[in-house]
Amino acid sequence: MSRKLIFALAPAFSLLMCASCAEGKEVGAANTSCQVRIDEADLIAARKSAPEADEIFEYAGQKGIRHKIFVFRAEVAGSEHKLPSIVLFHGGGWNEGKATQFFRQARFLAGRGYVVFLPEYGLTSDGLKPVDSMKDAASAWITIRSKAGEYNLALDQMSAGGGSAGGHLAATLAMDTPLRETPILPKPNALILFNPVIDNGPDGYGHSRVSAYWRNFSPLHNIAGDHPDTLFMVGDSDDYVPVATARRYCKLVGAKGAACELFVDPGQKHTWFNGPGFQTTLRLTTEFLDRRFDPAGTCR
Image 1: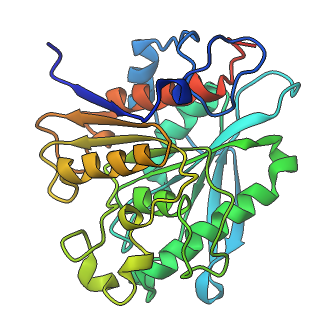
Image 2 (image 1 turned 180 degrees about the horizontal axis):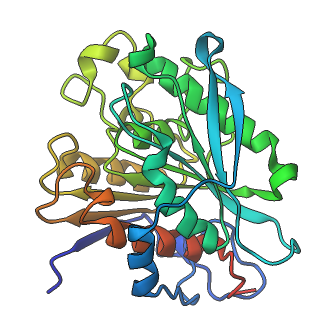
């Protein structure tokens, strides 16, 4: 038996799969007839790489602070089809961290045909609050969507993801909340969550810092009816994200009609995805996205 455990929770199998790669494929639905091929040597090379972004642009965050968004352009020939994309937010407890956390994953996914955006955002170390980080994430999301023409983006194939607090920010894009200037956003078409701190309730992560507004801040407590399919990855020795919380989140997402695939890595701690779990989590991420968005055109 593999030492890895994968749980897939969904209310109906037909919701997850389309019958074939032919006409009628539902955008965002998993397609198991598409063979996702990933060379282990490519994953090893990605782990050892030190890539740079292709472009940088800025957006206006809270208190007028300008933040960078790093862009990794899809490495595809021609532009016959609109391109899938993913926005990845770095972690750091809403207090620190840099977008470089996901540079290696970004270059790998760009090589698979995705346009990847890595936003910076306001931090408590800048004199802001966690709610400002959430508002900045929404502003970054809106700004990136406004550039769909410039980057040839398919607006119905835009995913979001992140690690730890960045995973929280990605998950907030899938919820409706009055804490934002734009309470209801165009939601991501998929979520990729690396040990996300999605429970900010009284017994959850960071509650003392968000106690005044946690009910509208905690993704676990605000799962919308049109929640996207989600990949949730966590180590079972994570000090901040209990496996029980991950299972509860997936159960609630499944109850809303979306797929939630939970990957639990025994013995692994918080942020292991950029250490011993780099290759495994990048493979799972790529498979999850490719089965839904097929940037290489395998099923067209």
